Structure formats: structure tokens, C-alpha cells
Length: 408
Ligand SMILES: *Cc1c(COP(=O)(O)O)cnc(C)c1O
Image 1 (cartoon, rainbow, N blue to C red):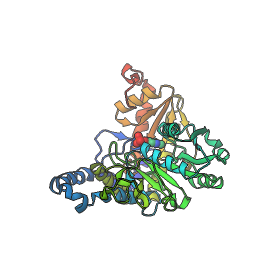
Image 2 (cartoon, rainbow, N blue to C red; image 1 turned 180 degrees about the vertical axis):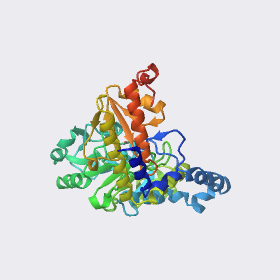
Image 3 (cartoon, protein in one colour; image 1 turned 30 degrees about the vertical axis):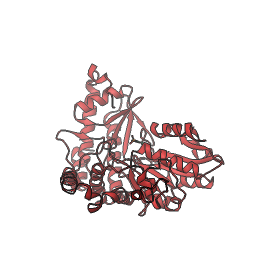
Image 4 (cartoon, rainbow, N blue to C red; image 1 turned 90 degrees about the vertical axis):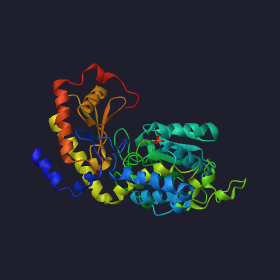
């Protein structure tokens, strides 16, 4: 691959024009949109308008006149279009962690007599921690197995199988349809965490028969730091879905101010407290960027980017102790590439110092995320050129690159 060939890929890229819609700093190659999505240019104005007009002028009237009260469902339905969920099955609320708690508590109540939440040992820690917290309160047990053991480990005691669709560390992607089928054949429910899928690749929750799902607003959905998360409850389960955070926003009649909790019909019952209107406004602007493109097109570009990084690293950086992590076949991965290096932390800090922002995941993984809306093939080329330079010169071996930051 030559630099000219890479430039030709950008010239032929049908999504190339989308990059202009993001406000990216000069001199930065941002390969961390899987941790915090970039800022859409439309967001400051949209949020500013909500602040100045809806809040400033409309004041409390805006709950009705600006439709604030329906924002969790309205933005939820938009996210639903990205993850294959028909209307009325997704709400935006709380964080992914809190939504996991609500979904797991409801799911285990829907499978009385079964107490196991089955997951994989490599799952994202918060997912596993939330089950442990639930197990302190309810007759629930966490069972963790290796990825390959999952289908055979689903048994008569499994209430719910909880998996992250795309592994945050390796990028490996589960076969959503097949695993969901295996869960159902054993009588269990299937809960998917879409943190590294939503907005990165096509997902078909309804088509796969998924029961429950959660996902993140601040990663590929570009909702901004700490953006609220989403929760999917398949329509067929909503009647039986009883979640424990029985706040007034999930009540059938919140403004009747009665003393007895009664869940709202439909997906609204998944809400707890007052929605974060300003954060929802930012999230909506981020989601709109994705709704403007075809997810299959997005996936094609994502595969082009990840393939190029893998190929260039293999060609250019051989002999420097880099080891590819995760499945070899990019079709079995999400929109990220991970490479292990014994000094991965320091190498990543050196990359960041040179403007190539990826991240590090213990114990030794350098992770590069590719948000296809704003990453160019030329960025991949340049990132590998800088990586090669850092490895060749040993520029990573400086004291400041070894000092661990609070957030990595
Ligand atoms: C990022 C991520 C989360 C984040 O959860 P928060 O509650 O938003 O902190 C959860 N699960 C997975 C798999 C993630 O990658």
C-alpha cells in the first residue's frame, strides 16, 4: 500500500463528506471514538438553543411545549433505528450500568426458579459488578465462563445470558442471532450490551429476537461525556418487565401524585427519575449524524479502515514485539483493532504525545477505535507511520510515558 493508494481510498469514500460535520482539533488523529465520540459541529448550536430558548424563555412550560417529557422515548426511537428496534422499545435514561441493573433485575424476575446470570469472564467489568450487586439483594448468582463455553453453559438454571456484543478489549463480536437462539432454546432470556456496537455497525435486535439490550450514549453515538445510555425491552416482554427503580417517571400517571407505584404501560416503565434534558439534546444531535447514513455503508468503511490498520501494522511494524489481539477475520470484529505490546502503555502515551489518540487496556493492549463517520484512510496511514517511528526510535521509553494517569 502506498500513500497514493490510500489517498485514492479516501477520494472514493462515499462517507468522506461526513467528516466535515465534526469539530476535530488540528494535528490530532482521533482513534478513540469508541471511548468518547467526537463533537458534531451541530451540537453546540442545538444544545445552545435548548438552553437559551427552551430553558431560558420557555422555562417550565417547555416540558410540554418543547416536548421535554417525551425526549427519552423520542431519542430512544431514533437509537432504535440504528440497532434494529421498532418504535416503542427503546428509552434513553441513566447510565449503562444503571440500565443493566434494571434489566437484570427485571429479567431474573421474569424467569422464576432460575437464578443464574450467565456471562463471560472477559466481559466489561461494570456489567459483572452490577450482577454482583444484584446478587446481594436478590436470589441471583453470577456465573462466568470463557467465551467458547457459553453455548454449552446455558442451562436449566440460567435466567438470563448477559453478553457484550463487541468485546471492549479484543474487538471480537458475538454472533447475536446464534447466541440469542441458544439462550432461548434453553429457556433463558438474552441481554445484549451494545456499548461497542450501537452506531458502529448494523445491529438487528428485533430480527435476532433479543429480549433486552443496553448501550452507551457517549461512544459511537457521539452524545458527549457522560451522555445518558439506552435500554431496549422487546415489546413482547414489556407487560412483564418489572424493574426495581420504581421512580415517578416510570409511573403510569406521574402527575396524579398518588402514593402507590403503578408501572407505565410500555417502555416508559423503564424510566426512573427526571430525564437529563440538556444531555439528551446533545445525544440527539450525535445520533442524528448516524441516522443520516446507511449503516451497511458505515460497516463497509469500518471494515476498510480496520483492515488497512491491520495490514499496515503487519507490513511496517514487524519485529517490534506487536501481537494482534482478537479474531483474524475483521468480519468477526467490531470497529476497533487491538494490538498487544509489553510496553503498550508507554507506547500509547508516546502516540498520544504525537497526536495519535487511541487508548490502553490492561494488561498490555493498545486499542484503536475507528468511528467511520470521521476517520479517513489517510489517518490510518499516518498513525502507522508515527507508530513505526516511535518503535524504531524507542521514543516511548521516557519517564513521563510510564506514569499512569487516573483515566486511561
Ligand atoms: C463503556 C461501557 C460501559 C459503560 O457503562 P457506564 O455506566 O456508562 O459507565 C458499560 N458496558 C460496556 C461493555 C462498556 O464498554
